[in-house]
Length: 243
Image (cartoon, rainbow, N blue to C red; front, side, top):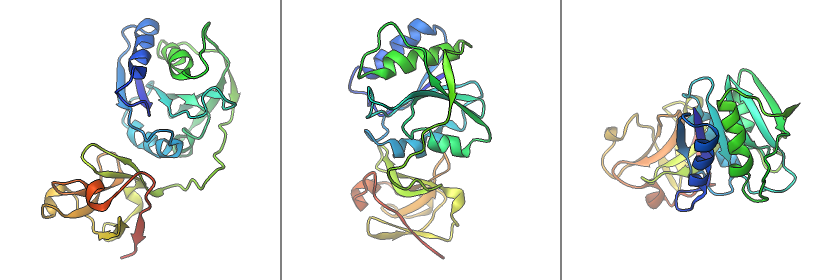
């Protein structure tokens, strides 16, 4: 199985071009579009989303992960094997939280190159064919290496920040819900929000926080948009209030 995780969106041809490579290079292998709405260019947001949304895929899954504002530059192309899954993409921090949370991992710098490699679309020309080969059971030419550790801004174990707004206006954070007590409140967008297990536990129009289906703290409004109500955007901080 091949799984796509990108900031490409769905309004342009990029996702379709990736699928065309998979159809040519790995016919018959299922391809899943997991995420194409990672905030554009936001490597850190992608890094915290990836392990939460990858955790339920079976061993042998190949993730093609492209949030790559440095494409064509000095960053290396890598493939990371972590907990019996493959992750293919740029060595720019995108795999940092996968690496930290894995029980075992091994990184390799990709040395294989296609006959045609554009400067600006390594997702199609390099990462997709490498992923197709891995899905076929082949190991492309690569050298053992360590991932490059992010050094620009703090990368805590859990990120108290909004990292994605879904189509309902819910604000997904980089906090694992297991690190919080349900007695804790969270300040977001100028309001103090209490915990609820599900939407129906609060009156319509009420803002609250809950553990989403992927284990992350999410800010929501019953029957409404937390983004609109609280003015939430990716990068907005959350403040934890002790019980």
